[in-house]
Amino acid sequence: MNDVVKSLSPRLPAAADKTAERPTREEAEAAVRTLIRWAGDDPQREGLHDTPKRVTKAFREFYSGYQDDPKEVLNKIFAEVEGYDDIVLVRDIPFYSHCEHHLVPFYGMTHIAYYPTKGVVGLSKLARLVEVYARRLQTQESMTAQIAAAMEEALEPRGVAVMIEAEHMCMSMRGVQKAGAMTLTTQFTGAFKNDPAEQVRFLTLVRHGKV
View 1 (cartoon, rainbow, N blue to C red):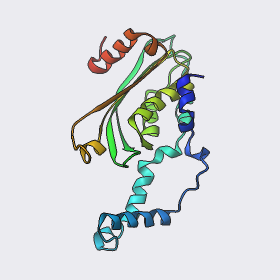
View 2: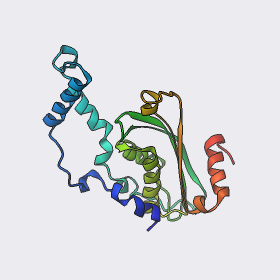
View 3: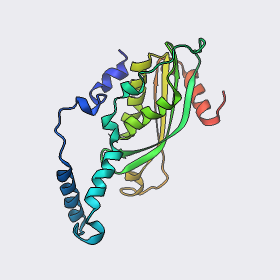
View 4: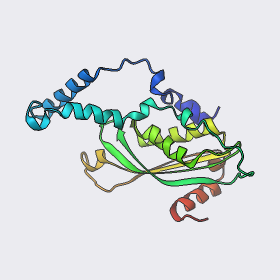
């Protein structure tokens, strides 16, 4: 198995495989009320009275990726592709995620490429894979590596390239407060990792759409 997959295996299982007991909705709403009080406001006032319900509902959507298994997303491979074995690239996949350190958003674009061997997956599946990992508490670095590892495991390609460009609200809204600063992360496996020319090809296609 690929070393990337091995190194990330503790983070790869779906939520169904985890043993931690999930709090009730009532407990979650009580926690929101506590945070509102901590912020200095009254959770019982009219504008905030239903906020705990809205927040818990939003959390279910924000973090729906815990309910999804990346293996299920990539389980359908199309082998009959007329012998195609060149690069497959999907770029500019938008995503929204939440920083696991501060629970504030980060968002941006993901670019994914791979060289197929046993077949290809539907292009929408790559966008769906990004959503599986984005809709969890994340770091950009982990998310980049997780996407590459999931593709390595499911597709056994000749190589995978993943690039994520994102702005982090924990840097824009708090701390140094530098809005507009972008963070770029990459993960290369196989042919992309071993051949610098393939990395250049990937980056060129991402930036300019042509070799």
